Length: 186
Image 1 (cartoon, rainbow, N blue to C red):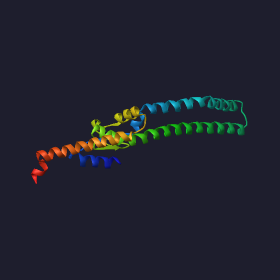
Image 2: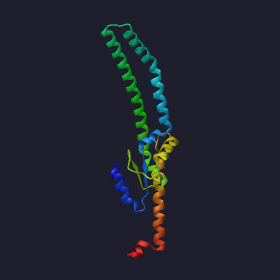
Image 3: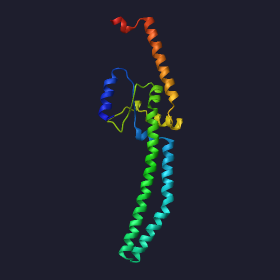
Image 4: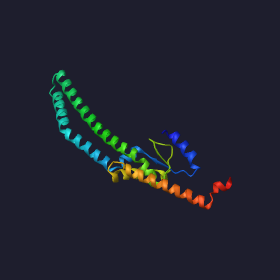
């Protein structure tokens, strides 16, 4: 959903008493315990490869200092550059995989969070001009993810849906008994 679409939807629903919640997916991922573990894994991986990189860099510096042939220097530069790129690519792959796993789980949890918190709409967006902190569910989403260890409970969503349906049925029955204000106007 684009920022513009989100703001238009918020304005349309605001007058109807609709509760709208907002989750910044990037911040929500970054606030989870699992993301901190992913970061620690990436850091440990990079640190484990650092001695190799240091050795290649030292060999390159020695070759330059010893005025080695241009071919030898280019070969050492190439080897160092390739190793550095491989380490960076693997670190990025690990971080991206961790973020994708958390994001997918959080997207599945949105409905359960909305039902539990009484929101009619939960918008995921990369950003918006302004989001009232009162409707920002980002921290709650991260906490829910941590509590549920990254797996949305289908049973919980079904149970919450049943509770909402039951509440609506009871409201309708009560209105029918008391005479609905909407019916009285007709």
